Structures are given as C-alpha cells and as structure tokens.
Length: 110
Ligand SMILES: [Zn+2]
View (cartoon, rainbow, N blue to C red):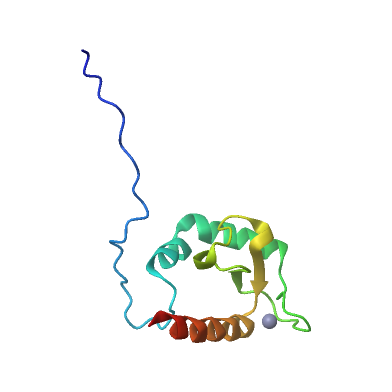
C-alpha cells in the first residue's frame, strides 16, 4: 500500500492561543476579533471602505468617518468581509457604540 502522505496541513487559525498583548486596552472584543481587526487585510479593506463612505453613517452626524464598523458584530455572527455589514463611523459615534457594546458584554460575561 502506498503511503502517500495526505496533505493534512490545516490552517488552524481559530485556536484560542491568542494572547492579548495590550493589557491597557479597555476594548472588550474577544481575542479572535482583536486579531481580525489588527490584520493587514482588514485595515486595507477598511481604508477602501472609508474612501467610499467618507462621512459618518449615524443619522444627523456630519463628521468624517474614522472607523469601519460591523453593523452586526462579527462576534455575533456578522459577516466579516461583507460590505453590506459595514458602516462608517466617526470617532465619537464609534465611542458611543463601543460603550454600549461594552455594557452588554459586561452584562453577558459572567
Ligand atoms: Zn458620527
């Protein structure tokens, strides 16, 4: 019997050996999300998205966009790479949304 070695090289990206490197970060995203948002691919896409959406998406807000936000958070099953799930937010609107998310995260965490 030929012992052809099967290519079981599997990229096991979703293991949880990710160590948060920045302890000061008060951003309570889970580590996988953190790695995603720090990835070069995401940053590049985010930049492109903001070129198309230079103004904050929030109603009545006219600030220029600063963040690309996932409408449905990826931690909740939202599409990572789907532009339909993106919205451009300015700094302050993003802070508001983050604060709200943090509240619900803290509530659900323990
Ligand atoms: Zn805004």
